[in-house]
Length: 284
Ligand code: PAF
Image (cartoon, rainbow, N blue to C red; front, side, top):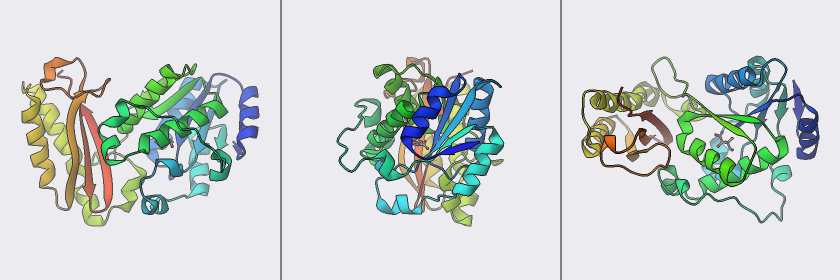
């Protein structure tokens, strides 16, 4: 596996690699969820194609300097995981190389980014869309794999690719979970042992809503109230949002049957750590 730091060298290398070129964009602190994305990229690139991974801790998408500072950067371990999962090229640029000191262009999504995490994290998705655009221009992937845990981010990347005419196929990959169903996230390591112990209750609340829908409940207000009630009793938990939306447009709905693909989204703070998760409410 080749490690490239300079954007110009990465761009040059990517022009010469065997296609298809599949990319997994990350901020590092990689875990088994990322490994699954990289293995999937390997599968879709095929034995002849190329898999690139980017590891770049993007300061533009953090709302607080403290949150950025707390983000772990175990680069040697990240490198080993990428290699093990089948990556061919690892792009690891510096902040100075990505953001020139006089840069003045941002990429802003103006609809999907205004709800859910966009409300509590103003500017976050502009930071994401800007860096993803830059990484796409540098790597020029044919396919990109993004995790469904960050469903809103995935929806915004799909929008970005179609609105800005990137010739890229966007592939969503199902959320990878711990054995107790906590969604894997680089932030999970920040949970205290007590917080970690109660954290699976978040997904349990989502599953409860999916079961209610399977048993015939159609009213969004009823489902939201039940989910809130389950989340509120988790020790140390503060609810940021609980919403049910059309999973494609991220528009709120009032009846499950109103759309073909309803999805429940939650963000919960456990102590100081903000966790997000989501589940399809498509009745089976
Ligand atoms: O999901 C992430 O890790 C980041 O938001 C991304 C897509 C790599 C952009 O910095």
